[in-house]
Image 1 (cartoon, rainbow, N blue to C red):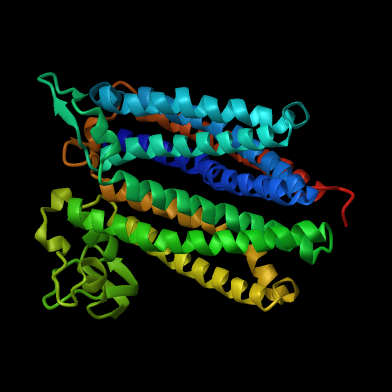
Image 2 (cartoon, helix red, strand yellow; image 1 turned 90 degrees about the vertical axis):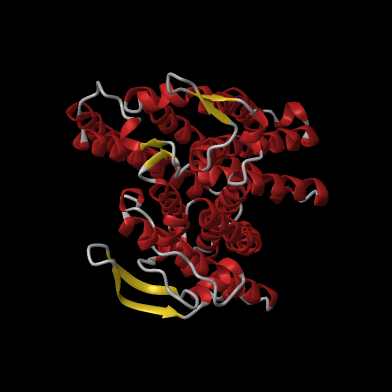
Length: 443
């Protein structure tokens, strides 16, 4: 059972990690596309319209990859996690079905109209189709995170005699205190990813001295959106989400912060340290006294509970992974704010486009928001373990009892090979779009 559960979890972790590389760009990029199209309507500058159409091509490629990788992931609910689906399908089926029926069809239908219908629709209706693509992608994210939030903090349910969960309050799904901070945090993080991609591509055009006008437009737009979204990720959304973890999952918070023992007189915040789970301590730590208590409770001397306050069977099953995932996310988020702030200063000084080292930095930084988003999701998912539905259903109770570990490993290896090919294909196609540029005749 333990081996089967390991491969079930590994396969889902791999497929969802690869899948989310694509929606995190499309959700943020849809907002920037709407912005470019709005700027065109306002200024009648054709370059903004070309920019909107260029990024929609990137969006469409990401969207197609997201669909291709998302469908096998959802099938795993019925194959590897059949018991979980059987018992909770009356609740999570609601939000997942709404995501498929409303958001996905809205997004895909109007994506086609935006890509091919500009001459037929005219510019104002073309803008509307772009806005509806944005709306569909953000609704899709909302409904997925509503599902995730119910698993983190179950509300509005009752459990029948046969063990099945049923919904007795539909509105509670969407007023879940876990939902809105999670959703806004996730969406702001997706804008960070798209801002770094837009800025990085713009920097590439400036440094290669091709499509210079577009390069400058992309860098300026990406820096402004990037600084605002990076700050929103940290405050208020990240702060509210952390306070939710403290309130609803205190054992998770202790593991995230590496607090093995409750400290009297206020808790320190650890900047660097390596968790030694066996001996329940942090090695080589660099910490600032009392800061964690103040950030969490607004009181320098407030006690923050350590792992020693909770039963060991309720500890997160991978404390080291949770700790590192959380600290990588926070560390990268801090770097993003610093980079974007520095770029904005240079923009105001009218020196950004000549600051080559900073443009190079933005080019090489493009993968890092993907890493930050991925480790953020790892923090949420590893933090919920050992539960599928927090405090109600253990992870080992949700796996399919009839699917062997050998079958799961076989398909897992197949997914690794297939997704490697898909990833290479995506990079080739995206590279062609970027090399061609928004307007091939512009130099």
